[in-house]
Length: 286
Image (spheres, rainbow, N blue to C red):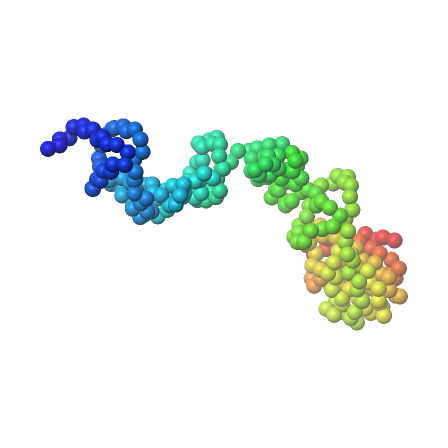
């Protein structure tokens, strides 16, 4: 009869099989060769624990090792690496070498600060393009080791590249007061002034550059959108007579009364700049 702590040796030649039923409990031991185990499943792993039999390792398919916890598969290892959810710290405070196909994190994932030349969030094969931390409440976007934009609580500061805008709309685009090169192409709104000395039935302005080509009477007008600090619209009156430029409801133009029109002389152009949320300032042009 076996006793606790007693050691046994199991020998055999290749091709011979041994079958164990129940649980094999051992304090320590060693073996040479290969131990042949059942494939197991996520619910019943081939290698488990006496106190937690549905947590351990199992074979999912050829050359793929599965990891189970609580009877469910939580990830697999293959020649491509690990696929699954990772919760916690990867590689202690310094990330270990290797690639994760998918990382799922609950809570906060902390990465290194990085720098413009060595961003902390990068792409495989392009290590100087990505995101990095600049300072409190701000981070940068780098391409080829050069900062392209910064994100702060004030919005996006940077360069919108190319001469043709890509599909999409910026709610707010903030640019630093520096000299830049390049061209900004804007398609103007070709408008016909409408209404009869009325703010409500005047033609709504929908683009930042407007050419009013038809003004059939001095009672006709166009209407600016709601003012918002920093907004700017350019209006050229190419019609045959003066045109009324109205603010949006409850806004004002210059020192004029709320909702009152400002007259734009025929053949002239002006810039309308919103100095705050309700007031437009007129910068007279040619």
